[in-house]
Amino acid sequence: MIWKRHGRNGIVNRNSVVAEQNPVGWRFDNTYAQLPDVFFAPAKPVTVSSPRVVILNHRLAEELGLELNSISQEAAAALFAGQDLPSGSRPIAQAYAGHQFGNFTMLGDGRAILLGEHRSRSGQLVDIQLKGAGQTSYSRRGDGRAALGPMLREYIISEAMFALGIPTTRSLAVVTTGEPVYRETKLPGAILTRVAASHIRVGTFEYTAATQNETNLRILADYTIHRHYPELANSPSRYSDFLRAVVDRQAALIAQWLLVGFIHGVMNTDNMAISGESIDYGPCAFMNAYLPETVFSSIDRSGRYAYGNQPAIAQWNLTRFAETLIPLIAPEQEQAIAIATEILNEYPALFEQYRLAGMRTKLGLQNAETGDLELAQSLLRWMQKVGADFTKTFRDLSETALPIGDRYEDPDFQEWQSQWQHRLSRENRSNDVARAAMRGVNPAIIPRNHRVEEALAAVQDHNDLSVLQQLLAALASPYESRPDFERYQEAPSDDGGYRTFCGT
Ligand code: AMP
Ligand code: MG
Image 1 (cartoon, rainbow, N blue to C red):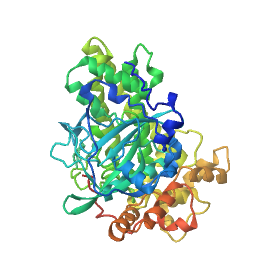
Image 2: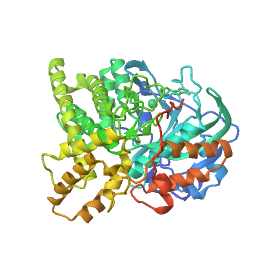
Image 3: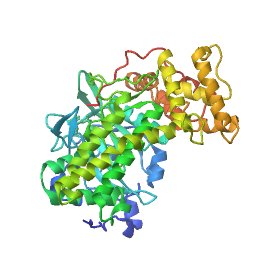
Image 4: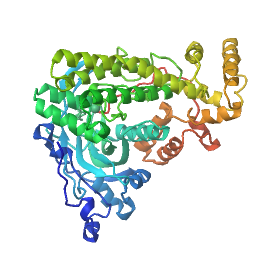
C-alpha cells in the first residue's frame, strides 16, 4: 500500500509564509497515521504547568534540518513538551504487543506520543516521538508520564551509542514539565523527544498477527519494507527476504552491542525495532569487568537478558517475528514454516561471523586466519579469570605500550600477548598502523555507570547541568584519549552492586 502525501507544509510547497509559521523547519509527512485505524489511536500531549528546557541536541537538530536557534527557550520548551505542536504533525499512539520476559501481552504506546515523521535534511523519514507526554488509549493503569532521571539516561546512552557507531534511536531534547511524577518517591516529570528510523517493533507485528487480519498484516509488512528495506519491495519472495534482512540486521546489531560491552537489559519483543536500531534504553548499562553473566537490571532476576544471553534472546525474538510472517511467506503453512525455519537457522552462524569480524578489528587484524576465533576467546577467558575491565583491556592493547605494573604481568597474559604479536606479524601492515586502526574501534570512553549516575545526581540534586554537559562532550568522541577526559576512561573500583531500573 502506498500512502498519500500531505501537501500541507510538505516539502513541495514550503514557502516564506510557511517558514514564518514554522521557523524550526519541520517537514512532516505522517505516513504511519495513514495506515488502517487498528494500528494507532489519536493522542494528545497532556497540558503541563511549566515546561522548561533541560537539554537540546543542536548537532542532531542540524542533521535533521531543524533550526532550534530560531526560537526562544520558552518556545522550545513548549514545543518539546508537546504544548505547541509542530506544524504538520499529527499526534498518535501506536498499537503494539510484545513478549515481556517471555510472556505475551497487549501493550501500545502508554507513555509515548508519535508526532509523525519528519523528513530530514538527507531526505530520510524519521519518527519524532514525545516520551512521557501523558496518557494515551494504551496507558492501562499507567500515568503516561516519565521522570527526569530515566529520560536523561536515555539521552546519554542513545547519544553515546550513536557516537560509538552503533545503529540507535537518537535524543533531540529533554524538557521538564514542572509537574511531579509519583514512583517510589516523588520525582520531577520530564519529556524526551526521541528520533527514530521508526518505532515499528517485533511487537507491532505480533499485535497485528494477533488480530488475525491478513490484509492488515500485509499492509504493515509492505509499509515496513517500503520504509526500511525498499530494495526488497519488488522481489517476488519479498516477505521471506524481509525476514532474512531483519535477521541479518539484528545479528549485526547484537554483535556490535557485545563488542562494546553493552547490555540492553530488557530485550522484550516490543523493544526490538524492525529497522535494526537499538531502542528503549531503560535498564541498560555497560559491562565493566568481562563476565558474560553480567546483569544490572533489578527486575531481571533470572539473568534472561544478561550480557552473554543477548545473541540467543535476539534469536528467540526473531522467531516470534518470523511466526507473524508465516501467512505471507508462502500459501501453504508447512512450506512457509520450512522457509522461515531455514532463515532463522542461519542466524547463529551469521551472528558469529559478525562477532568474529568485529573481534578481528578489535585485535588489529585485517586478514582472516582460522586461529583468530581461538585467539580472541583466549583473551576473553583471561579477562574473565582476572576480572579485567573489558573496555580498558582492548583500549590498552590499542596503545603503543601497555601500562606497567599491572595485571599484564600475569604469565597467562604474557603468553597470550606473544601469540597475538606473532599473529600481528603475519599482517601486511606495521604494528603502529594496526594499533592506530585499533584505536578507531576500541573506545576509550563509554558511558560508565558511575559517571552516568554522577551526571544525573548533579542535575537532580543540585540543578547543575555542567557534569552532564561534560559527560556528553566526552561521549561524543569515544575513540579519542584526551587528557582532560581521563576520568571518563577509568573503570570503577567495584560495580558488583550496581542496579538499574526500568524507566517507568
Ligand atoms: P517499557 O518497559 O518502557 O518498554 O514499556 C513497556 C510498556 O509499558 C509499554 O507499552 C509502555 O508504553 C508502557 N508504560 C511504561 N511506563 C508507562 C507509564 N508510566 N504509563 C503508561 N504506560 C507505561
Ligand atoms: Mg518499550
